[in-house]
Length: 202
Image (cartoon, rainbow, N blue to C red; front, side):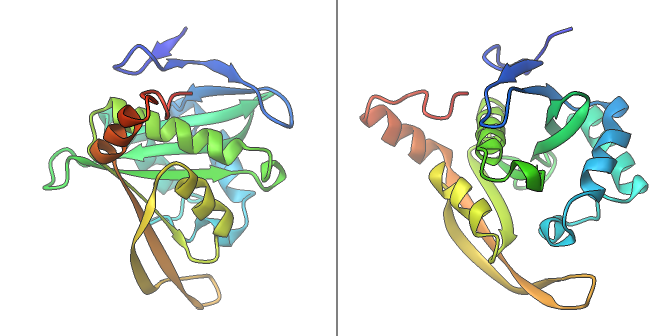
């Protein structure tokens, strides 16, 4: 069955071209929890430091699924042959004072680094967030995740804050987090000025 976000321009599942072979993009459901756990557990521990919770834990995955079912998260999986290769999430809190803000999170398997998958997923998350009506998008990562930072900067994100020693890894070492943000209205105005109204479309 094809599922569509509230805007008809994003349909799932669908296939996208990738440097390492075609990949299916589809919305995550409760049935994907075990496969996403396997994906998360195969990632380097450092890749997970920017997340507020450890998604390698079943109870955290259960909470993620419940948030999807409540409509608080849109999560898109990149899948090939039944294996999860990446995921993107758009997180919002409609009941907070920041209901206009969406946080974007993107993870890609190490084997797919450099293939463009991270950028594909980041672009997908941006498009979903904009179609949901969010005015501001934010993403955070450790300062040494230069590839991830470059992916978001290419989409118009700019550094907004540096959180010093904000997370600790499993060895107890502290790491800084950088917060990037994207003002949707300003970006869309710039795109209209240049005649590029669908710059974030997939």
